[in-house]
View 1 (tube, rainbow, N blue to C red):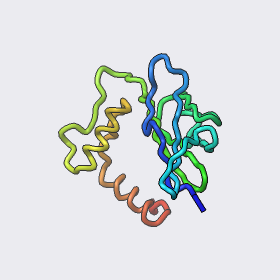
View 2 (view 1 turned 45 degrees about the vertical axis):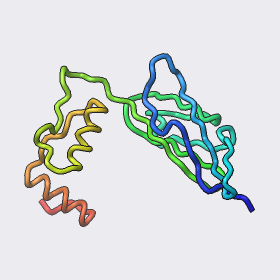
View 3 (view 1 turned 180 degrees about the vertical axis):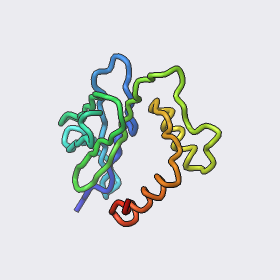
View 4 (view 1 turned 120 degrees about the horizontal axis):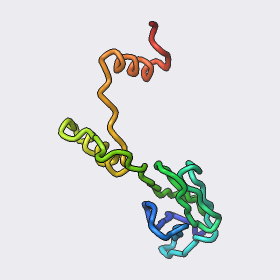
Length: 145
């Protein structure tokens, strides 16, 4: 029996485009016999956050507000996802980020995402705040006062 082995979705990242109310997706199913077929009109679509983007039954994405979300695509037992990014309005003259304080490779990734979304970096937490957060993460309970 021929089955779906993979879903390919284009584009893989959506950002707002001027003069584009909706942005269409193209979904291609790779089948176990090595062939491909376009299934855009038969796939199922779900937005993980309807305040950022919604998606029609035909795979047309409408970006609604700032934030980041994913559009999940399902067909024939296979699942794929694309990312939707809508930057927040730039409210200041410059977006403060971690800049030269970024010391770990993950810091550089976070800094790039903050810049792309026009978000400032959070200030460094105090030792007390940090320990409170770690305690909550590890135990699932707030520490005693």
